[in-house]
Image (cartoon, rainbow, N blue to C red; front, side):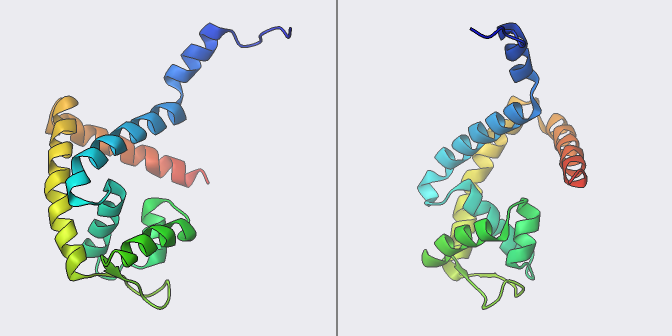
Length: 151
């Protein structure tokens, strides 16, 4: 049997402090909470995020969304295609043309947004309230910028 270079204790400590492990676990848990909360609207939190971006940024393109979501264009197209077939948005002929919500997309945005507010309030309260949350968001923004600049 090979000799352990990394002891089980070292592995537990590494897992507990690993940036990737902690962020991905947190993201999975938050996604599950938001998706459960938004189930009555028939959309996921990911889809709501796309609806929000498209509505809030009238000239947003597929390429812009990919950059904002830190995803590749192919992945973004796949999500948008599912939303298009549900009648939530209009897809342009080219990736460099702006996207637009349909009337149904706007209705889902309103319905999903109301449900989203419940999950958001629950999480903000759990971390200590709006001031603590705002501080955390600024820190996460700094982390995101640092990660992006290291490419």
